[in-house]
Length: 280
Image 1 (cartoon, rainbow, N blue to C red):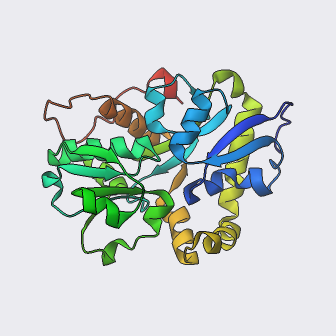
Image 2: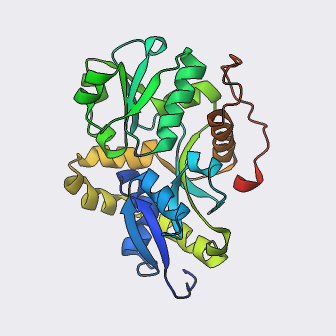
């Protein structure tokens, strides 16, 4: 049973990509419907709205946790434990030869993830510039392109005449840890136990109704049903445990520049303590 949420309604900003749908399915169709004032934006815009006080809680890209002092809804997020399928680095050259990278800046987390992987795994330090998610135009201006979210799902990696790297898999091979792309976060005073439980119930409802999501979301987004089903059940992880939070902390340390010039590429230390900000 979902606890009662007192008025006024909290403003919740969710991400417009397919990967967020299970998290908000209960808010859209379950017993949590009507509890929150729900809007949809790209990931970076969600973070900006929460930071500006124009939204109370949002799906916040992991990188933003190093820039804003926010609480999180524990146990929930958008993560992967291997290939994620929707964060793709497409390159005309071997990764170590990438000098310029055109990046869809809808999520600063993915841009920083690409930088970390290219630096730590391949010794590349490309110049990164923003670009709309159009693969042809991006590769016309740079050695490689970073495509994320639904635009990445519209690509067929095996049919592209370029090198394609799934950054979920690349991160797992680099660190041995899951990658957490985003979490529900907001000011601590907004994250009451009742609110957190409503968010968890919404996700549980979504995970129990994946076939309804497939039927509802595949055609409007222009995706085959099997792609949606496989993506939501095999690639994306929504329920986070200790390993996911170890991966999140490792990402935040690496994104903060730890060892950037020390040449210490390789496995992360899985015993590193969680920061208070993201402690379970």
